Image 1 (cartoon, rainbow, N blue to C red):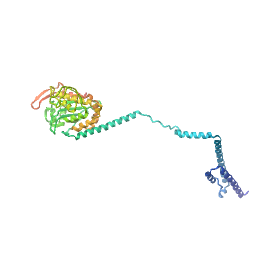
Image 2 (cartoon, helix red, strand yellow; image 1 turned 90 degrees about the horizontal axis):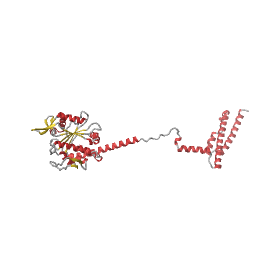
Image 3 (tube, rainbow, N blue to C red; image 1 turned 30 degrees about the vertical axis):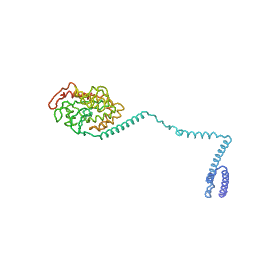
Image 4 (cartoon, rainbow, N blue to C red; image 1 turned 90 degrees about the vertical axis):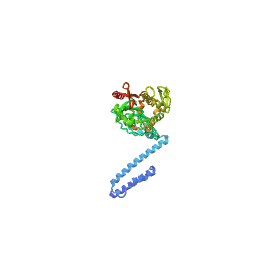
Length: 418
């Protein structure tokens, strides 16, 4: 058989296979698959028929693909017949569907070994957050109330202006406040009616300490000579009074506050609308604007001022200083109540607005909690201390208290250390 005859025979065989292929797909293959499969298994072209070996291999591949497809179709037909006869899905389909449902219901099955860790509840973190919010809210309220009181007081009429004061920090780091009370009006120079030094230590548990100087104490006023200590304010204001305290008692003051009578009344009434509870030592009526009966009672700012200023008795200035310290102690103690603490920033703002002073807001915020915390334990000292003084008399200054300077200096040093 020559080569042409072999090719003719091969084309005939392929034509017959194609007819068989078309008859199979007319029964089994879906319409959208028929075209693509026909193209895949179409008759070789004239150029392809030149290589008989390649054609034979392609024919074998086509027959294998056809047989596999027919087996798959037979498998599907068997499954369809089983469903129609029993009305149930075969076990293979059920198992596969259950696996698919479980994967959708429980996504963690998709990635075994990568379990999400549950976040632990940390009560300490929540407690810390609550504390921070409380502190922030308290700070915001305090600043707002302080500024409100300061602005209201600043709008009021003032009789005194701010003074020059070159304050000095004490050797132990404390920043003492010089408190000056007087009754000057219309800018007139006057002697200080009250002289106190408020000491607040640097430790959080430090108790406030109050030192009162009796105004008739005979001291050396720098640049003036000897005179009563209250005269130093009339000669040179708060700055000269600061220098006088340093020279005679070795006590430094960083800040000062000047409080007149009207300021005292307004601050007390703002802080204690219902009055300050205090035990009056005795009946008082001479040279004061309102009579006071002995015993426990509540005093307004005006009445409390009369009680603190009274000295027309046998004790004179000694009794007066003692009552002033009593008043300060009661104010500190009663300022610890919850209702009063809420008014402290507002009252502090009023004090700062009414009275000339150089106390910065940072100092107030820094020590406000310490003062409120330890207010019930205010320690007091009166200068001159017992057994360190005697009465003196001179033509220039009249009656005065002649003191042992070194003994009182030592008493102040020990008082501030303990």
